[in-house]
Amino acid sequence: MTDVWVERYRKEVLPKLADTLRPSSVLVFGSRAVGAAHPESDLDVIIVAEAFAGIPFVRRMAHVLGLVRFPKHVDYAARFPQPPLKPDDLGLSLGCRLGGYVVWHPTQSRQPGNT
Image (cartoon, one colour):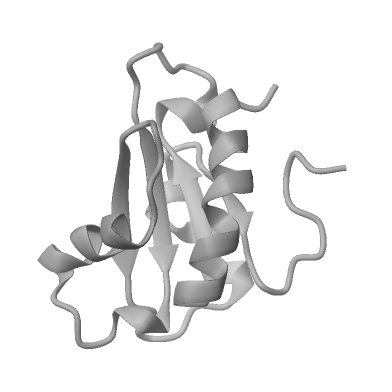
């Protein structure tokens, strides 16, 4: 069963992020991704996007928070893909090793949890 906050994030935030940042991928990891979340648990998200070029790493989360609003706290790890990542590389990323999964990738026609 997919976490209700992950599904809500997918529907409410991902379309705006896709239009604004044009990410190469977005991953969800942590307790909400593995089904171990408590009601107060936040949402952990990795965004990989060329749009972060020139933005210092420590300012990227604030940049994303300024673009989108969500009622549940989201911890963002905003990465610049250098070297560029291929979809096959995503399975090796930190998020996936922590039980996470890709919730958005421009080459995927069907996202996890969507039928």
